[in-house]
Amino acid sequence: MTEMAPAPRNMPVMTADGNLQRYLQEIRKFPMLEADNEFALAKRWREEGDVDSVHVLVTSHLRLVAKIAMGYRGYGLPVAELISEGNVGMMLAVKRFEPDKGFRLSTYAMWWIRASIQEYILRSWSLVKMGTTAAQKKLFFNLRRMKSKIHEIDDGDLAPESVTKIATDLKVTEDEVVQMNRRMTGGDQSLNAPMQADGESEWQDWLADDTDTQDVTVAESQELEHRRGMLQAAMKNLMERERRILVERRLKDDPATLEELSGVFGVSRERVRQIEVRAFEKVQRAIRNMAMKETLDQEKAVETFRAD
Image (cartoon, rainbow, N blue to C red; front, side, top):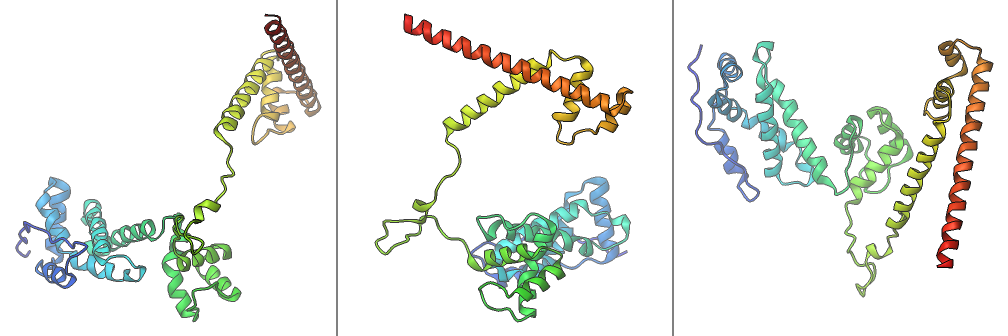
């Protein structure tokens, strides 16, 4: 086995205003590891927690990170940031690397490096989140290549046949292709951008808030809680079997069938239906009585207030 590589004291950092060529020269100073050397370092980290071994494993693969990061320069983000995110992925890969499985660290790490860089691009590309599913991420990182392949180089909407082909090849919907293409070609617009030459009117001035006001939201919430309370009080008047059947048939998103409940309670489907109807009528009657009582109490309170 070759001699163990010494742990470097410092790891070069690619700053936003740094010189790329200088950084690439710096990381070339770290030698590539042979397989047996890499295996020994990885084992030492996993079994002994040796931090120096981690340092050697990471720095020996900085060239791999830089090479992968260069492939993502077309997204308009600083190379320094892409390399930095790739280095994070490299460190995560070293932390989880299992040398006993028989493959080299570079083979395992490239997936972590790409994932880290891609997540950063998705976070940074737009103020609006671009995509969350694996298919949407695949669409984001392959759309440009596929547009070039089918000679769709304009920044406008794609031709219908192009949309169909891309959607089929990437296994996403046509609407997702259209929306992603518009997001990638349109860019973000500031809400403070002026709409007229005088600069007095901004985009945000024309945005209407269709959501309910706080007063309406609170009132609806209180009303909902009140109705729930009345329902719970009304259901206390039911027999246990009536209450269970009513809940299963009327108060669940996926109601039970008459057949299922007939098996549970050992009665016919018609009998279950009759119990359900009777229980529902009891609850209706109880709620109606409670509502009438509340109305009468409110009227008395108003009369008392006027009398005072």
